[in-house]
Image (cartoon, rainbow, N blue to C red; front, side, top):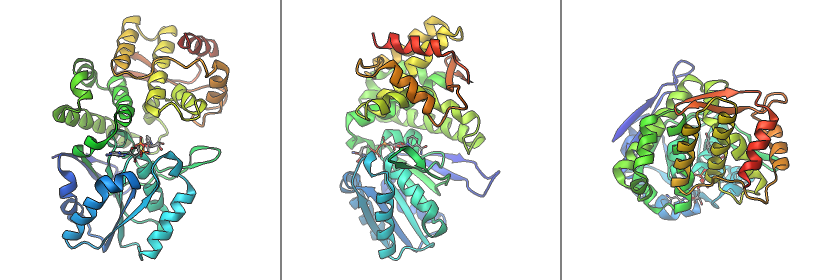
Length: 364
Ligand SMILES: NC(=O)c1ccc[n+]([C@@H]2O[C@H](COP(=O)([O-])OP(=O)(O)OC[C@H]3O[C@@H](n4cnc5c(N)ncnc54)[C@H](O)[C@@H]3O)[C@@H](O)[C@H]2O)c1
């Protein structure tokens, strides 16, 4: 088992470990018990993950003498709402959960964001741990303490910063993940390779077959590398006011494509197209060499991720979305651009003409 420590104790005694390996679910009882044991454990999971892995975890923890319960909600982004949060909270109250209880988020990013939000406000906060079950959650959403709830007006408009007591990444759980969800997470892994880790970039380029086959050793390497990068950035900028924004590489255009498609284009595909846009804008602005841009686009294509913008999504609608994005400052659209693979930078005043030309050409 690999352990990565997330050091946040400059602000609060909030440091915790990320444990990565195979068979972690079987050992979770011991790992959780190593910290301050709770009097009651409530696993919260969507119904898909609950039936695949939640019941097993409940039996395992129960067998170790823990007082353990399982609370479920319907799967998918449409559950990341206040309504679901209130339904889970009602169940917690019925079960008698109090501040000596611990929540266990077992699932993908939706479960993580929702459970972390509940943990941060239920009875003025209770501890929680995350067992991420999607690649997206294992490499990205579980780390960093951002919680989130969607509102009808937009995604993640309610949220808090609240750190888990531990993250337990069992690579075996990925074996039941559908291909489309696996690819979703891969887009974030490619992002880390492009903006930060050239060894990861080379591995992704040279071993695509093994990555797609979910080779166990390769999975361990890409998940560990990704967690190390994300935790390193979070340690420097826990509250997302500076360097953490480089993690938005590909996300400015990506979020706009995702929203304009009515969320029919997956987050991973939208971010992939957004990364293509970002490297093209970088090249047009004279920051990135054409051969580096081509190499990055090649990587995205190797993994079968989206590299164009569908004709049904107009440049005007994307421009309008981006100027409304909550990550913009004033009128300027914020872009994370690239000087070279591994060297991203934030550009607050990319010329609108360059953005428009890029989006137009990506419709071709
Ligand atoms: N907090 C953050 O920093 C952060 C960062 C990135 C994304 N997010 C959030 O993460 C969410 C997306 O996360 P996601 O992609 O994991 O989606 P998700 O949690 O909805 O999971 C995707 C689907 O996979 C299923 N699933 C999960 N694990 C499975 C497994 N092991 N086997 C079979 N099926 C499984 C789920 O039931 C669901 O249907 C979004 O809401 C996004 O806003 C948060």
